[in-house]
Length: 391
Image (cartoon, helix red, strand yellow):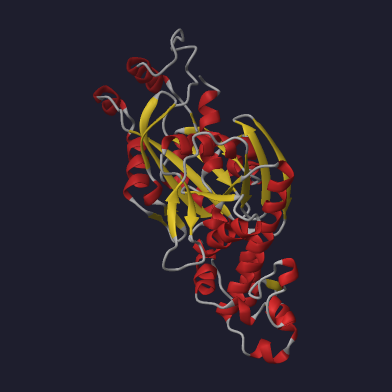
C-alpha cells in the first residue's frame, strides 16, 4: 500500500539507507512507507499479507504516527479478526527483506463475501487515513475497484494474477528452506508422512493453482511461463456442491464432513462393474469408475450420509484435477507438478489422493509437490511488484 503523505517516512528511510542511492527526498516523496500490504482477492477467499518491519530505529519509532502503531499492534497481537478473519500464525515468516527493510510477514485470510466488513475494519483502524493505494491481484481487484474508492477512498493498484502467483511462490520458497514437500507412502496411514523436497533447481515444472477454479501453468523460468489448461471444477465447485448436498456452510465444515465419510457408498467402483480388477488395462477394483454412480439407486440414496456425500464430492473434484494435471505434465514432458491454492488448506485428503494418483498412473515418473503457504503466493507477489515499482 502506498501512503497518503510520506515526508516523515521518507526522511526516516533515508536515514536508515533504505531509499535507493541518488534519490532526493523530493524525488522519493511517493516511495511507499508503512503499512505494507498485498491482497489477492479471489472468488471465494481473500488473502492478505502484512509486512511488519523489525528494523525500526529509535528515531523512526519516536516519529511514527499513533495510527500506524495501532495498526501494527492490532494485526500482530490477534489471530482472529471478527468472526471470519484469521491470521495463520504457523505460516509467519521472520527475518525477511522486502523493499530494503527487514521484518516479519504475516498471512491473513477472510471470505471474499465479507469484504464490506473488511473495509469497515480498515476505517475503524485508521488505515484509510494513511493509505491511498492498495496493491492487489485476483479477480476481485477488478470487481471491488469502485467499492474501495467509494468506501475508503483507496485506489487498487492491480497486478497480473499469474505473474504475482509465480513471483510470490519463488520468493517464499527461496526464503523458507522447508517450503516444498511431498507425501511419502500417501495411501498407508501408518507410514504416510511429509518429506521435504529440494526445489533449488526447479525448471521446468507445472503449477496447478486450485482456487475457485483451476489454472495449469507450465513454468520454464522466473519470467517464462504459459497457461496450458484449466477447469471450472475447483474449490468453489467442491464447496458449492457440499453446501447443496449436505447443508454445510463453510469450507472447514465441508472438509470435516469429508474426513469421516466413505465415498464408496456414493461412487461406483471398477469392482462394482467387473466384480474385481480390470487387469487387462491395469485398473484396480478400488478405482472410481463413475463418480456418484451409486446414487441412481433409491436404496443407496436412502442409506448415504452427509459425510459420505462430502467425501465423494471431494474425491470427484480431486480426481478430475489430478487427471488434467497428469495429462498436462505428459504433454509438456515435465516430471514435477506443484499443487497450490486454498483448496489444499486443511485438506490432506486431496493432497494424498493427488500424490498417489500422480505416482501410480505415471509408474513413479511424476512427482506431486506441495507448498506450505498454499494460497498466499499471489498476495506476496503483488506486494513485491508494487515495491519494485519504486526501486
